[in-house]
Image 1 (cartoon, helix red, strand yellow):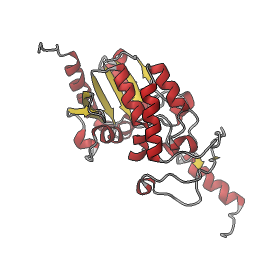
Image 2 (tube, helix red, strand yellow; image 1 turned 90 degrees about the vertical axis):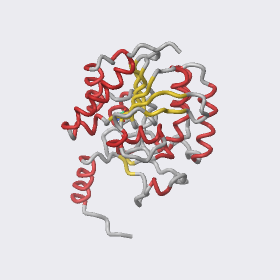
Image 3 (cartoon, helix red, strand yellow; image 1 turned 45 degrees about the vertical axis):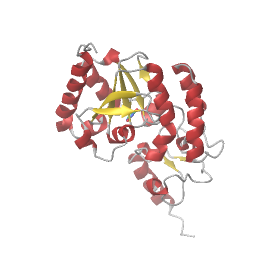
Length: 271
Ligand code: URA
């Protein structure tokens, strides 16, 4: 058993972590979730809140990934409209983030009949608080960019996962796979004309690619649903959180939006 830290040292360490964005402690030892792949921790540990608001602890253990995917597929297929789909997501217990400090499901915002579906990576702290995607600093920049491109009324905004990953980390592929049936169902129900994939984790997951976002962005790809029944043009672009850190890259994201609006406004050619 290591010696307990003096109180002042422990407080200063906790303050340092909180400043760095760590808001929950889940396990005694670090766990590489990418390596862990399909294995979720067998017994989730109730998060210890470092932030002022305590979060609800786990009600039950999360099912394993394959079980969770089958459950998500079943629930998603049963949803006949977006309201039912949002309710199914909120009631779904298979997403591991529920047991890691996320407080509520974050589904989508915007026009349900929008021609463009914007798909980000996953909700952050502000999104978790408000229950809506892209409402923090990055979301405000995204909104300004969409407005400048005349897209505000023409988008439905969502994410690859519907619960906040702890500490705003990037969701791992197996975590995105658990939520993918809901995302696919949302696409099937709202029938957008095209997808805007915001950030590397979104582009790689939806397009099943390994390339980095700097090489994927600005090019058209064909997104295909897992059963092959749906196909849509998809444009990867840079994440607004990246643009906040690297404002010099904004011109590339702007050019991506112009490419997207050009295609959106192109008259349909007769077959
Ligand atoms: N980043 C995302 O990818 N999605 C959000 O909803 C917020 C920030």
